[in-house]
Image (cartoon, rainbow, N blue to C red; front, side, top):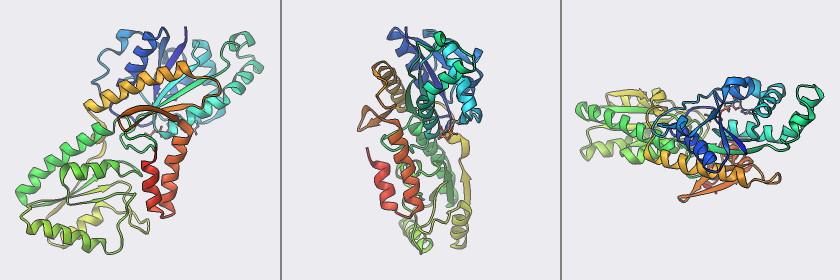
Length: 362
Ligand code: ATP
């Protein structure tokens, strides 16, 4: 029987539990054994009780739970070869040679690196007499499959990452709340949203709440934006709008790559005579129950991840499970990560059209 491990790594995202549940149950359904690795790579390095066999009922109730029940961590020791060698030893002791990782691009990069090094890590373990040749013999290859868990929706080659629609719903609820008080007092609110270098949450929240103006990293504002923003807001006010909502993504910049801050925007609106407040949504955006979309996405992708494990050959590059035009598809993990990094590079080199193209590319 194959033994498949599942873990969550990097920042948490609503829907990660759905992914764990789907991997565990699909593994059991496929006549494999399932193991949860607690606290991300930390659990892999520590081994022992941090790697636990999971039965059907162990993931009961996971689908509707936010965050990640099996925990996540940023693990410095897995960044070192020594840590990865210990992780390989712990996996072999548990008989696991396939890992499904739900995390961001860092976690997925680490996983693929682990797979590449796997044969040499095993050789080292034998040389150091930590394991016998007989113990390592059945575990020639490591299978890695990635699932993208991130509220930011920042991975290229997928239309949605697990967690992004829950976060978007939370942002919209928060802006709706701000909206009622803004309308009552005819105030302006500057709302800061997460997303790091990706403007997806902000762009979609802007559309979904009918905001007056947004700032995102991929389409930085040009010189004279202050007056442009004010003229749009004045136009809206002249049409009878009693409130103003401006959303600033945490990675917002102008065309010269200067950061746009909520305070800067507030000062401009205040000077123009609007009673302006800042609302920083912070970690509220990551919390709470997963939206229906993320439950579905994580379930379908978890099922596909197990299929990918069972179909993998030593030659197949590690896949990441994506969603393109409502279809669950596999893409080469390293290519998806590389393309995502290209977006940041394109922004740094001020090629904003290229950044947009790469974000949308399949
Ligand atoms: P998020 O998008 O939420 O930040 P992430 O997966 O990108 O998620 P990271 O902090 O970059 O988050 O990575 C999580 C963990 O993955 C790290 O703490 C480390 O243990 C492991 N990891 C990341 N990059 C590598 C790497 N290049 N080699 C080995 N391990 C890595």
